[in-house]
Length: 235
Image (tube, rainbow, N blue to C red; front, side, top):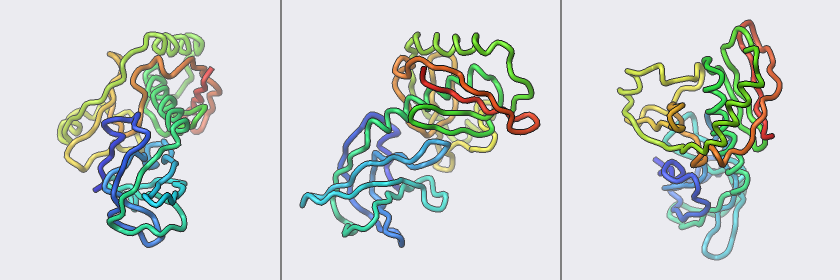
């Protein structure tokens, strides 16, 4: 298992780690990492891995191998690393922070549109959620105002943990229909935004809604009989 340092501190930009394995295609598995692996609509982090002699390797992607949510593989191309090597990690911080802002903004969007979520995508300058929403609400401007009121309120965004069994007993907490929360390790992380939202999430978030910045609801597209895709932009 890889220790996910970003779970306890999403603002860590650097760290040290040890190589524990090399995958068949040259990917690097570390004992711990600050790199988030692609999942839940959030892209994998990028950055660099360095060794004491000064060599530096570019991390182009980070993934969970074969659906194993306990391990992260760092894709770095050609390299000479071996198990046991000590390395230094550095995130592409501006990119990660932009993704954190978008991810937190989409949690707000899932509150202002109180429908089951059927999909989503997190980008650096915008994001979107798909909803099981038969009809589009009439007053989109009012919903956008509510989003920005929540941003201006600078509500804290915090995390807490419950057991797998506790989540199974409270299925109403799961908003996503197709993406399952990260279970199977005995406990599940919840993300709480003030007193307006609490939902399972393994992604990275900012510490308060004020860090998100002004938002604008974009195009709403019909993607099926009841499916609607809602775009969210930074204003």
